[in-house]
Amino acid sequence: MLQLKPIVSELMRCAIGDGKTTSFCYDHWTNLGPLIGVAGQTGPPSLRVRIGASVSDATVDGTWRFPAARSHEIQNIQMIPAPVVFWHKVIWFKENIPRNTFMSWLALLRRLPTKDIIRRWGLNLTDQCVRCNSAVETHHHCFFECSFSSALWLKFGSNILPNPPEDLHSAAAWIASSSRVFCSKQVILLEFFFQSIIYIIWRERNSRIFTSVSSSSSVLHLALDRLLRDRLLSFPAPSPAGPLLLQLYFAFYRPP
Image 1 (tube, rainbow, N blue to C red):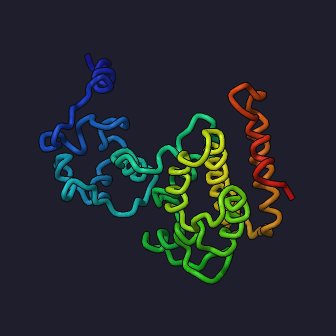
Image 2: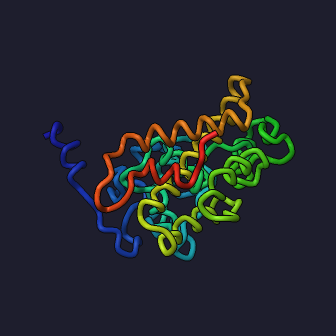
């Protein structure tokens, strides 16, 4: 019988309803299973939730009120209860590059460990952006308020539409609404641009911090172009439905 307990636990699910009778920690109401098993006994306090709290107790006026995550386990828990957001189709599409998609998802959720967040965790480090050296590093500064990242974003984005927004969430909204202007393949190309630029910018940031190796904007332009072309080359040949994505890419952008 003892051997059956883990199996039975996996099969059990809880209907949340209004959340008043569902245990936040012990009931199986998320895809992660009982949350007490994900983050342990210290998990609920770090989320400012009582061990015995219901799901509804963990909300204020129907909205989650969690502090900044300080571990991957807590980060995963916070992502599961997250509501559907307007930019979800900009992130999740079948042609995506998984690592770029994951990085972009974290950026839009403001879950990347930018320096302002790390300082809130109590670590003593300078919060200055390592690319422009002129502002505090936040998610919005990284994407795309920083003059270094802005130049990369505008270089590619303005080839598709003039004056693309220089703010992470405004850019996502711009792409989400682009289906009213562009065909589906053009929208996919925009999504590729957006996610790949986020990936390249964050990779450059980590390189400067952890290896003290810096790349110029021209080198990053080449790296981004190579990344996009390698992915677009993997798609099948043109069909009567429209041009190859790589052909569409060259129609919008002339590589350096």
